[in-house]
View (cartoon, rainbow, N blue to C red):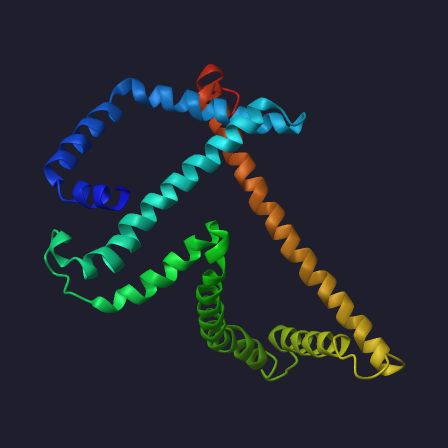
Length: 249
């Protein structure tokens, strides 16, 4: 009953247009902006309450966030992927534009997708392994080409740039030494003694610098999100910039 009901709902554009217009008129009310700001501020404080300890307010905000995100993602997948790539090719008369032709080949990926749902049935859960085998194998084969051409070869090419007595040449030298020493560090076929030990230690330093820079970039992004939330609470919710106009807030 669920799938036919969704199809019938898609076949009633007049009702959908009426419901969409009513929803838009309700959302565009002047007081809805204020209500939205208070709801967003309350949920932000609920999430910040975890700084003190785990509490029911944080769990409420967490569950609400996950539930809304899952529902939104489900709607996006239905309207942008499932309908145009499976429903319309299988049932062309459901396409409002009338541009989709009949394509029975979509039944094969549809069956593979249905196999994943069979994990909920213990006796038939083994069928999902077929789908995961296709998915993992196909994704691995697709990504190998992209990784080699998009990451490995450009990085290899950057170590072959000409050296010179300039800052650019010095930068090329640092990249060359760093890449070679990191490779030596991961070369475990010989014992790390003498020159090999010295080069592997240099490789460790390069790895520490790279991991530290990556971690610092992640922290910077998280702090940027925190600043955005604090600006929302102080300016959009509490309006401190209007209460203290000369304070520079």
